[in-house]
Image (cartoon, rainbow, N blue to C red; front, side, top):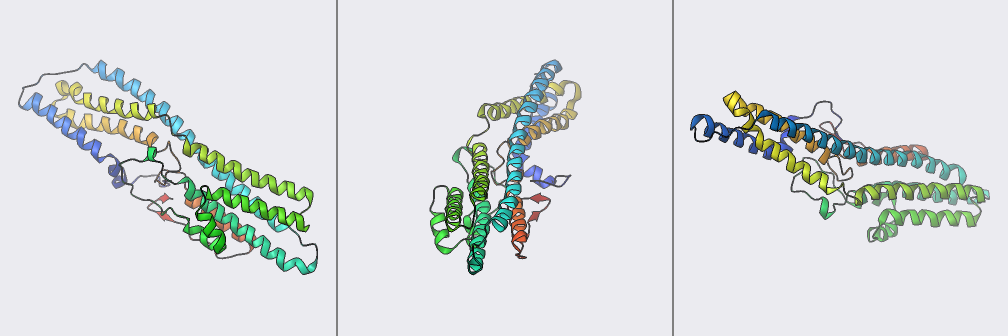
Length: 318
């Protein structure tokens, strides 16, 4: 997620230079053919491009609003994960109680295993959501990308759990299953009462809901007709602009048409790069930052002061 108020120009041109090169070459060619060589006298009335610009602006506005809704829903879902993670840790500490003093150390180790397994679940869910689906792949290289593997979970799981976890089709869900099994064992040992067992199970269900909502966004791409036609319309609009201004403005038509095309290109890119919030890109929901926040909060609740360091690269929270 970009947090700086001012975007770096090198970042902007990294994603726009190919289209900008086309706009510049087209405007120069139209000027040379019309004014310099005088071999082409094609001129479009201003009303033509005005009507197209208005329609395109409305179309892009609709697309961007819906793309932002997807991004914001993803951010709200992970905000819930922060809240429930704090609640779950508090429940593990305060609701799992030994039935005899001799069980105190065993219960403490049991609580620690479940607390740290939850941290592993958060990191695993981040990695799981950032897997790239074939239909979301683009030919655009990214400036920043996080390493996306399950190595961050290794220190929070036993060796056996980690080996089994890595080979599961849905690793985060496997960790929730382990949490449920341990919770049942605690109930059978008498460490958790009926009421406390139900309340803690409800919290585990909320983690399932959070994962399911995230997967719904991840596995349901933004309607492709909006993405495709917005690119087509922006291309058509940019291709017609030089023919509209060349008659009245002459050489000035070149920078004017390039600037206007750049504006519509950026509007299109804003929506396109926001529509899938879990793709490990600059504009995505900052899953790494939120995961580290949860890890810090949970460790602090447990009493562990070994907090992770957050990452911020050139005003980008990953």
